[in-house]
Length: 317
Image (tube, rainbow, N blue to C red; front, side):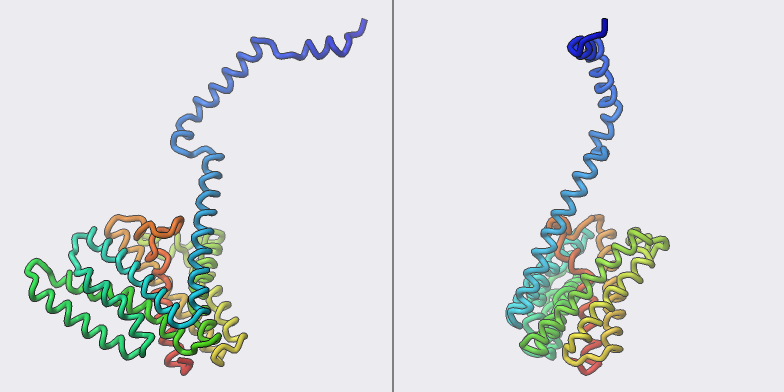
């Protein structure tokens, strides 16, 4: 007589012995991967960690870009105040790192000068020369009156102010060339080319990178990534030319793209070597997913000043 459907269902029910065997198999599997689980190396853990980092980095990056865009299009004064704040924060991170290396710069003088540089750039570019002179005089007086200070401490104080305050003030000088839309677009092109350069360099380098650019300083950078970044920077400046901003000619726009892209890479490598010399991974932790503000602005500092000189001697500013 054929078995009824109910009989087949009962025969397929797991027995206690089968359940115990399955439990043992699961337990053995867990024990075999316990080391990976503790180290956070399981595929599910890596995927979750990567997703969280991506969301954090993207969100903080969007907030950072949005604040800059609002200030750029709001006007010259909001841009100046923002740049002064950013330069001050970058300078604070720089001085913190050099202190880790055993140096003792005068942070009060350095940070005060850092704030003055963007403010002076808004008034007139020549004011920056006067600020530099006052900075060196103040540091000279401090060095003479402070026996514990070394000449390296004095030099680092001046350099830190120029590195962050003076270089960042180029953004204000470019924005101040025109109080209206063209000034905002030209400044956005200057800063945007650095952002796109970084993005293209990462995408191309991670996909096609084979030849290391500076393995001892930044092992992840490649020559292919460098070329990709330069292409991205030139695309942004070609758009600036296409929009007719300040009647910038195409050859000058492309020169700005290449030169600022190369200067940005130098700025990135400079800060990377600085961090390696003091044994830190990031300059700070101000921006979630990005580290410190100096980590986010290292390329910008060198690239924007390079762009300023090209636009100035090219007759655009």
